Every structure is written in C-alpha cells, then in structure tokens.
Image 1 (cartoon, rainbow, N blue to C red):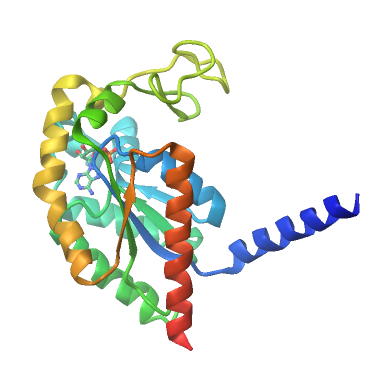
Image 2: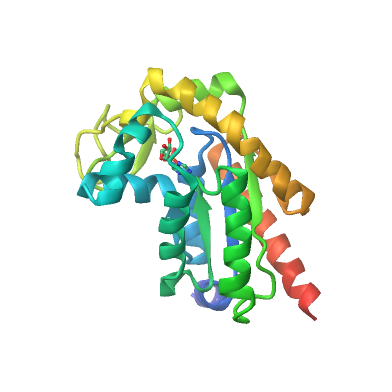
Length: 254
Ligand code: AMP
C-alpha cells in the first residue's frame, strides 16, 4: 500500500511538473506515413501541450466549407502543397491561442523553407521578445523511414471518422477488421492516402521539405529518429530527445 502511495505521489508530481514546465516549440519532420500523427498524439499527452497539425486544420476548413476550405480543397485532393501564406496564417492564428503558451507540437509544418523562416521570425516575436520563452528556435525531430515501408504504411492506414483514432492494417490493426475499437464506427481511408496521390505527396515532401531539415541542421536543432523501430521505441527516443533539449535550453539560461 505504502509503495502504491509513493508511486502515486511520484506520478502526480511528475504530471504537475509536466503541467508547469515550458516545453517550447517542437517540430516533427518526416514524410507522409512516418508516424508523425501517432507520435504527436503521444507527445501531446506526455507534456500536456497541444498538437498543431496543419493537415488537420486544413481538412477542418474543407469540411466546414469556409472560404479557405473552398480555396484549398482541390490542392489537397491533388496532393499538392497549399500556398505558404495561407498555411502561415492559420498557424499564426492557432499558436496565439492560450493553450499554446507553454509549447506545442507542429505536425506537418513547416514544410517549405519559406514556412521555416516565417516560423522562426514568428516564434521570436511572439514568445522570445515577450519574455515567455528563453529560446524560440524549435526542437526539430526528424523521423526517417525506408521508402518502400512508407508506401506499405500509407496504403494500410485507416482512420475512425467519429473519434479520429488512427490504425494501420499492417502494424496497428483494430480488434475487429475495419471497425474502430473505441466506438465501433466503420474505419475509412483518407482521400489523400489513396495510391495515386501518395507518390505525388512523397515527391512533394522530398522536393520541398529537405531544405527545411537543412535549415534547422545549420542551426543545430535537428534530432534524427529511426522511424522503422517499433512505435513505442520511437516514442521513447523522441521524449528523450525533447527532455535533453529542453534541459539544455534551461541550463543555458543560467
Ligand atoms: P498532412 O495531413 O500533413 O499529410 O497534410 C495533408 C495535405 O494538407 C497536404 O498534402 C497538403 O496539401 C496540405 N498541407 C498540410 N500542411 C501543409 C503545409 N505546411 N504546407 C502546405 N500544404 C500543407
């Protein structure tokens, strides 16, 4: 019993620590299918910071048929990138929300060098110059996965339309084929996960995102993680990298 109470106390204090600590900006880089969505959700739960996925934000606009949604629907369906200024606007709007002040995970952004340069300037102005954070540059976690494994992963991806939970028929299948474990909804394939769109998405990633990784490599902010490893192991490596990096930022402040 005493042991259990001690464990509960440790659990409670580390949860309180996570709630108080400034984590700062985290960028997850990786091609479609690298597991960014899954890992983002896990990091979010661990540090209690929001996940900001530009893909999700854009899809929500499309679903609600907002002016932006109508503007970008065809671009997303083709697997092309949405123009930088439109994506930067929705990111700025989202990062000014109160829940993002301790930090956030950017999933799917920045995807081009223009977006990366914009992000650095935005974070410096919004968080460093207002004395909210000691360092504005993001920790960039780069998840790397073999190309053929990526194709297999993406074609196996299924999403629950009701709760948003992500499955994979190869690596993380639901208990019952094509049915969500949580709410029994029939799982769906995202429109842009269909075979003909995938190659274009991977090509767009290669063409445009490499300069983003290089940009942050020059700033010494990139941590490489092997995304071919089992999903739990990838999570542990990412959390270690973030803890190491936020500690070194806190240390350099003193
Ligand atoms: P994702 O869910 O991150 O794979 O994004 C789905 C689609 O949304 C992409 O194929 C793009 O059309 C669009 N998109 C998401 N994030 C960005 C971004 N940072 N820049 C441009 N387009 C984006």
